[in-house]
Length: 212
Image (cartoon, rainbow, N blue to C red; front, side):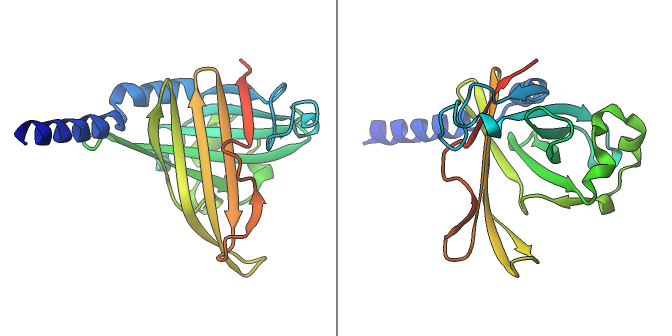
């Protein structure tokens, strides 16, 4: 009986520690997240690459220095067809690491006026001047990160934000996987009945390979 109890406790301990983000993990995430990614040759919402070519996405990830947000802030730019004239989205990802709990969360922020912050990573002065009033939360809650093999997965489940256009709450499910060789993302919005308003139930709707 004692042996069985000890084994059960040991398995629980191993399972818990395996899900922690160590300081070494955190440094690795910050190192491999930065770079450029492209979906050429990959799938979109499960479609073969030849059918999904029109949905080609190119993503640039770069560290930026925004004083009021603290350290470990990344600017992320999404371009359709890798065309500067087809800006799809811009975000700031703010990572926060709790060393005592060995836990990592990130918050996704978007700009109140996208056109004013294109290529923010190339403009140190504008980074320093950025204020909270110029930003808004993209998801409504933080993503929690866990290790997965040689990769790391961040999930935000049932984040809620009010849509003034739809005049109702929308529940957001967001997932991102950062790996040495690429980046995968998925985002889905549902109404209170569970009806999908946008996005895809695919595990990872958008898969990108490291470009540079």
